[in-house]
Length: 411
Image (cartoon, rainbow, N blue to C red; front, side):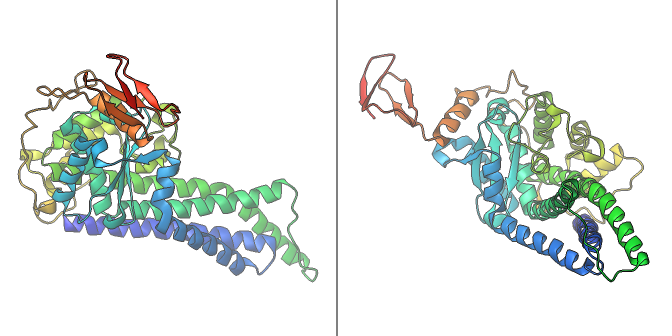
């Protein structure tokens, strides 16, 4: 398991190095195309832009992503079941702090995590996810996101996305400058040969400005796909129940047609499944995630029910015969035990129509909607007749009347 983590880190370094090389090359050729000998200045500007954006992303990236995604922070009393599941996975992973929990008011089924380290982590889920998944499935999804935090995937993908954004921004500025007729400066003392060399650099800069964003996106999405497998393995080990995540992925795949309006190409790799699938974006080399069917197949074929990294890799190798699994011993991740039985109160194979506790009066859909209302500062009054009165934040009357028993309450 540790060898696999080291291998993943080495590959991550290669991907970062490739992206950095692309960034510096773009800065150099644009500088040389602007003025002979200005290549180092172009590199300095490109690196400077990346450093500034990196500092912003490192310290405020989580808050920015939550704001862009339309997520709102909730408290434990807003949804005790969700908080309980998150706390269970935090204990299983050995994290010292429970992440902040957010909800996104969307019928789409998805979730993601942010944070540069476990001490600054946050988890966001959509309202649709809470309405459709049973407890075992929700636990699998949360465990997947906690695994991302433990493996520092969030920090890595955030820094890589900043580098991608820097490349896109620099390319866009250069191309717009050419489009609006900005002339490339030419030294007065330059010879004909130097002028031809600058023309070559201009053509090279134009080609690289067009191709660099595409190549950077391919690198970025390749890194995202690779880390999803490791997070799936971590989730299976944390829950000791691979079927929970596998069945959750089935439900998410069945509801992939529901769009998540706040998602975009930059944030898509952070989600547990591709939120752009409904729009037909992010396919092929630009796919943000491995095929969901393959992820489900691997989770359900873990040999002997042993929840360890080697058992997951062996299952992955059986689905990919051309690739040899990478591990040296059977050390379990987080010292997990054998797989557990499904929760007695929940159906492990619940679908969209039956994802309700078998022996519980809970109503997940109502709880999810109430959680969203609380996130948007609705007030709740429990009437003596048993009705829960929900008052919107813009309600401007001093009293409210219960529609069932006509009791009057002060707001």
